Image (cartoon, rainbow, N blue to C red):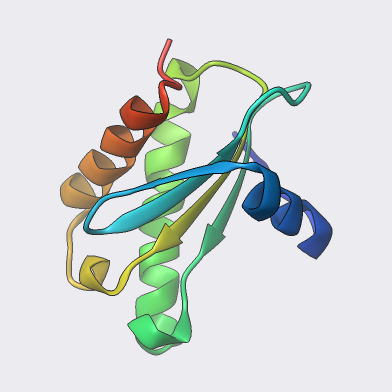
Length: 109
């Protein structure tokens, strides 16, 4: 199981001091150099859809992170922000987008 980012100040620190990379479905903010295991946060805006749609996307992102966490270097705080184009995508497409961004950030072992 992976660890979640806590309250708003932790999110703000990652947004302010982290680096961002994006593809057509997601934006990923990463702050490296932290201690301990990787910690994750997810952001799915109301622009994407109603609560059912937003929670479905969050579940897909959470499952992708759970599956790929063992492949990553330790000590990162990561926020994944969903873009509107992710709305009707299946797990394989979302997972591919997450892996693509992890490679761009150089987080894979």
